[in-house]
Length: 157
Image (cartoon, rainbow, N blue to C red; front, side):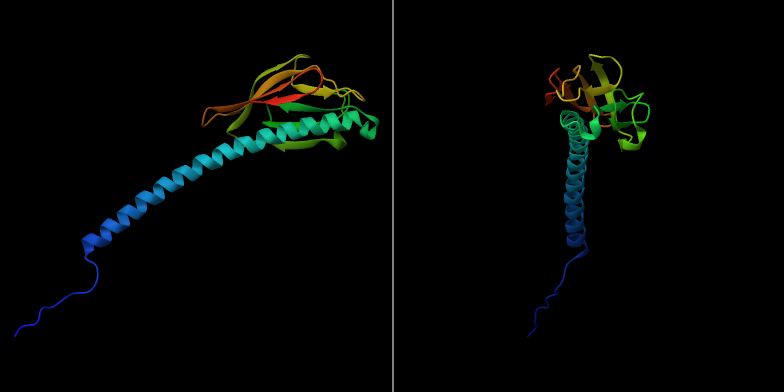
């Protein structure tokens, strides 16, 4: 009487198939995580710009350091600067707070009522000239539009 022999384990074909499916799922997950990270990075930096604008307005309203405050959008340096003073050119540089953007994020379509790249808030009233600008992710062609009215109210789209 012959006994049937059973082999326990996986064949090379089964191992290859499982490994291929695992790599396919891993690739899809990595692509999704990469897109999520890019979107969250742009949103995070846009929120940082808005937070700096709100801080500048709050400092001006409260007469912090007995001075108006503002934010300058530095397109050449790919950064924005919270500053103390009536204008960016005449600011007190010891109070500058600089936030740099990653290379893929830039300011575009800057249309501020006073012209230029600065948003200055009036002391005590918190009013500003108003205008709008975009924070653009050049790699993914995504943008966030930030608009200010003359009362300093900020809208993000």
